[in-house]
Image 1 (cartoon, rainbow, N blue to C red):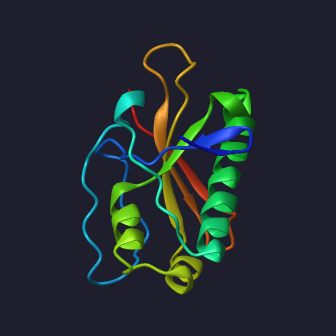
Image 2 (image 1 turned 180 degrees about the vertical axis):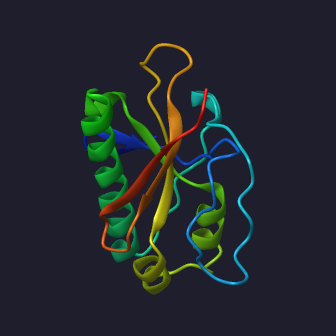
Length: 139
């Protein structure tokens, strides 16, 4: 897991039914339903351009802060990760810094310390890192 200050950025997927991700390009792969992998199955975090990494970190931290405020939890109990389609587009070079700044980013999130079922959902950010929406998957 890649630490982003108090919360964490997990390279994983998001359960189906949470809405579409921001458009990144006409050829970007479609989002694939996936659940957060077990700790021993987490994907390696790739290295990107430093400006791109900074945008991802700032946006994910904004999501962590918004979730902390909304659910009144400690930042360390919040996990966020890039959605699968967006991650694939970034890794494949189809979504670069310019497209992410214009289209924004989408992160899956989970509060594993909350009573079962743990809240899980989607956090969307603008290209400047500010949070647009926090969506929670229905139980």
